Length: 171
Image (tube, rainbow, N blue to C red; front, side, top):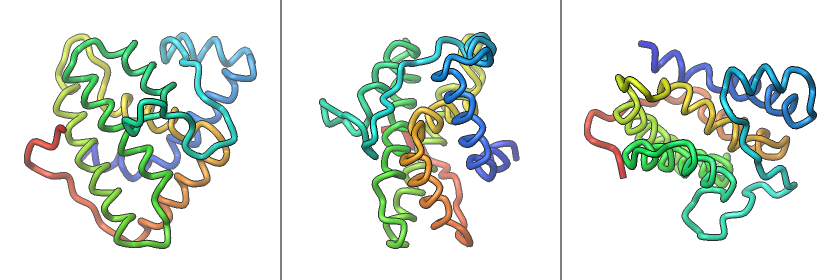
């Protein structure tokens, strides 16, 4: 199943997108290639804080919130992308030594991915859902500190299993 293969390769995708975003941020020639392929490159919070700024306390970093609002005009797609961004933000917050908390965050991510696929799949003008997930992962883990926290979360999931829910998981 394509979704299962996508989920198992997220760490590689995050690393690749991090490199692309660093090239864009550094102003290298690859930045123009990335911009042409991926669309407008958002201006992201690159502060040294793990969680960044969330002034409205909605669980999504303000820079990511602004990007999602500007990118997704369909309320269903915006809600699904926001749910995914909240779930991704929680991967940075969770204590990787607390196995139960890690599994709860993993369940949130599964629910968010399922919701996102239900809102983006099959649309004639929408992005592929896997691309939306990759973009949100990349934006969330856009600094070394954030990427390391995300990798610790993923490492904490080693040896565990996950499944996608069948019911409506959109919040």
